[in-house]
Amino acid sequence: MNQLPFIVAAYAVTVVILGGLVLASWADFRRHKRLLAARAASRDDAR
Amino acid sequence: MLRFFASLANPTRFAGLADRLLPWLAGATALAFAAGLYMALVIAPADYQQGESVRIMYIHVPAAWLALGCWTAMSVAALGTLVWRHPLADVAQQAAAPVGAAFTAVCLLTGSLWGRPAWGTWWVWDARLTSVLVLFLMYLGVMALWRAIDDPGRAARAVAILTLVGFVNVPIVKFSVEWWFTLHQGASLTISGSAIDPAMLRPLLVMALGYLLLFVTLLLMRMRTELMRRRLRRMALVAASGLAAGTI
Image (cartoon, rainbow over all chains, first blue to last red; front, top):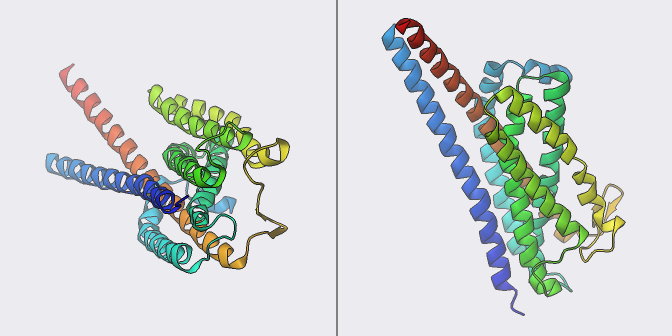
């Protein structure tokens, strides 16, 4: 049996799952940082 | 050690430490993965029985270790919530669950992709495979429970109890290959020694280091995000209560 497709599929699955989690976590982190900065800026303006 | 964890009870101090550590951890993770993948795909030899499919082991085995390690870390955090009432313990639990679920999914899928050429089947309902599937479902259960309860304090306590009850499955996964007759092989790497040739052990350990660093990086990043989310929620509540007071 040709094992190469199984090896490629295993590495691809790993990259998709872990890479997806890294990207989603990073995007969430950046979004919350922006939101917090915007909220702090609007509070300063209100003062 | 306890004093160090106690010093992190201040979320602002923790956020500062996480912000300083994250770039270094991300860099170290990338380096470990680059070295590990080069060793696993280029340097490591093919196995005399499994052939080239042994290269799947370099991503499958560390994922299995981290899947169990993550639940163990969540159980320690659950004790932190229930016993020591550490303010960051439930944040750590909430942040770790999706990471553990991802590692368990990688473990299950890569194991299945290795099993087809090695065993001639994608899946068997043996003790090891079934207990790891149960671990994956428990991760999903913890994530669902966080979303199901609105009050964060009650959700944290419920998740902590579920996590501690679920810890029973960790030794079952670990020792399933010894307690029952399974298709899955026994442990090749133990505290007393290794049955793996050094040419294959080295890439495995470097990949395991990469997975561990990725886990710590993701955990810190997601804990930091969760702290920001809670702060935003508090600010929104204060603003809403201020508006309500103004209208009365």
